[in-house]
Amino acid sequence: MPGAFDACVLIHTLEHVPAPHETLATIRQLLRPAGLLCVVVPDAIGNPSDFYTIDHTAHYDAALLARTIDRTGFGTELVPDLIANELTACAVSGAPVRAPEGAPDYGPAVAELERFERGLAALPDEPCYVFGTALIGVLVARGLGERCVGFVDEAPFQIGKAVLGRPVCHPRDAAHRTVVLGVAESVARRVAPRLAGFGCRVVNPWNCEGEHDERRSA
Image (cartoon, rainbow, N blue to C red):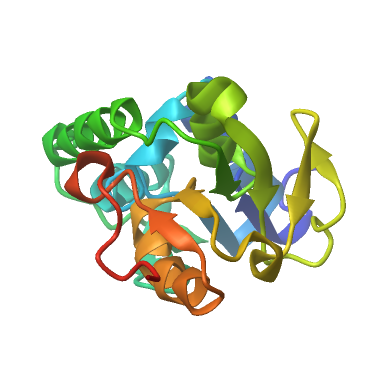
């Protein structure tokens, strides 16, 4: 039904679509004139761990996202810093506002990942908990192998569950234990002081190639 919809919202969808231009063109046909489109995708530059997600068919920076949407007949505006480590674009069906041409510069993100992997290789040879139960946390836990004795999480719905057969506990239950940060670097910077406040010995693979975070507890 062409022109049947006022708006369309794609949250963590476009990065999974093999043919984004064709998908967006179809959406534009389904929207009424001046219909609204909102797209949210991971920021591959701000959060380089997005490159570990194998079912993402594209890794977007701001310019690539805007250009992808513009090319299908939308006028696109990026909403800066709305969600940490995410890119948000709002677009109106109609005359496009062309984004700058050029391929994304993935070099800095790749360098961050290389530093992170050196940090993983330097993790302590002792029993550890991993903070974070999502993709990066599981990646860190698998790298630790038998050294990973459990997970730490602040989300109430995760505490008491198990990941990879290991229990998930609150940070207070890992006091005086080594906790490796298994989250994006920007999140790791915010989480480290909180974990140290619970008495955890914090190890940040993004920092000093696996050495203990300088904010760790004594």
